[in-house]
Image (tube, rainbow, N blue to C red; front, side, top):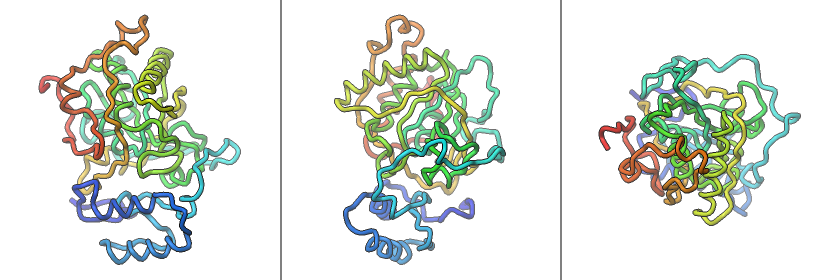
Length: 323
């Protein structure tokens, strides 16, 4: 099926991350010293004349990602709003058409089984982030949404405006008897470049920042220890925020498990650095026994994120028996 929400610009499938559409998206997102007065009409015309479908010159978008683009925003460093300047939002929660995970078939909204634990991660565009986590053995459910901002119940367009303070994130419910929190942290660090500040790859904005949002003191301790260890491996300053998990607002239905749905566009801007967080040495000694990795080395050799395109894996969850 090629059905999609009306606000999507439907394009032929783009199997490569280096498709012409994606290259134009890169050009639109790249900061440049040249005048926006020159680039706005030029790129608007280029999009209209060289790509299927039409793109409004009034509200210019990336036809590859359907993400709103601001030519003026290309010249301004992304900054978080304050509670006073953020959009007011609304009391009504986002309505989801289904509470069933498109791949795992489990509920995406709690309450979850008592043995499950939860955490929230942000590594840039939430489409690719979610796919990486739902494929990991032991993950019970994932959902994309917005967190760490000020605006209650924001919409996607509002988050993309940069005026809510929210980050694009993935809520992960997992079984700690199968997958350790240290395994999830390893996937988190290896899935992106955590040194890029307010952006990731081709995506620039406060909603694309790196973040770990914890629900327990032990999650906090492990997150901070892993950050210190990965920063030493990366050999540059990491900008990841590690803060308590506040309200998690579910994103629109069409964003949930987006990359597994018919008609989706295989886009992900994450920038894995090819550096692994292996072993247990980084785990504080008092927590090492409880949080030792459970996912075998064969998983990482076969399914770990790789530099370049990160979403070419199968949509199915990896089974431990297959490793």
